[in-house]
Length: 467
Image 1 (spheres, rainbow, N blue to C red):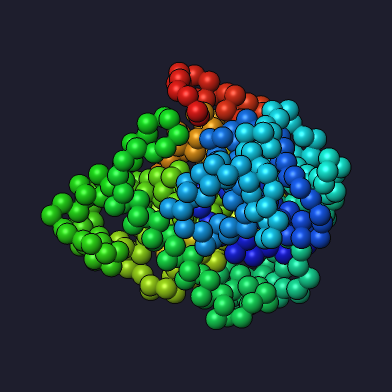
Image 2 (image 1 turned 90 degrees about the horizontal axis):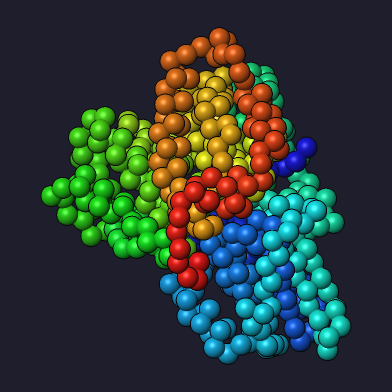
């Protein structure tokens, strides 16, 4: 049974894509470590399939350069990225500790549109010395920044014995019924098999603070997103309209002002959209966000979580912990039973999964039992089935940013339906919808799976250079 942690689902990094930016970045970091054992004077990278077709828009070429240089996506200052890239371009070199080699991004990063047999997202690294190959590694980027070296058995290798092994929703129901524990408590017990309870709490708080910061940064930043589509940021204007005369210069002051806004439907609805837009505008600008479960869907969880934190009676961090543990485990179940990669399953695997995660987390915080939590997750996914991934020009902007707002709203509606319904009357259960999502993804035409060869990507006429 695959041992996934909620921290495999929630990871701090930068945008715009977990599969096309963070995954290749992590692969480049791993290859950099491998190179310490070899003498080499040249490195080249080949990007296949979806990584090639939408790689420019997803910054895949930028990610592999930063990874080869040894920068960590969790700690890098995104404001430094342009200067780092300009340094490579100007010097036409790249440094590997004491070894500096010639490197030209336009020549040494090769885009190959044909699909690799292993996966829709594949990249190969090759190092040579005096023209002879010394080492080559090929990776699959599996979505959610998960990567797998071809030849490895699994992308996550753990040998811990979990208190409550979970493979599907039925396992969760069995464990909660037999143990008398809540859903979140079962997940917490498993997490403390992998790290201490203090470490779990600290990591959950880091995730929450990063989510909140990404919303705030998106709410105070205006302008045009780079890439050529001339997409205007909207979160700041929405935030300013909602807060009206309130003044704030810090995140704490902003948070205080938020809590004073009137709790009426239109206002709450707009705040939820604002939160989601803010995160994904930051993501599109290579800002720091939390992969949840992917970068393209990173706005759904923060939007619903902050909706609960700011506008509903809550228990502060206790509810944050409950929300993230339940939501993270639901993400794990989709990863195990289907996919969280749009290149494999379309946008149902990203926005659909994040909406299901958020619906489950919110239901747990609102007092729902395990049956209702799984029912909420099922409802949210059921109404995302078949959602295509068709980013215009391969940029994680249109329709990606708005889809996060839609996913957040659907999550809240799904939670409401589950809390006011009877799971015993449900026609569809959670495990059935996971299976259906996977089968739908397999049947979906490849043009609708992050290739920018169908849908809006083909029917919206845009023409600009360097995209």
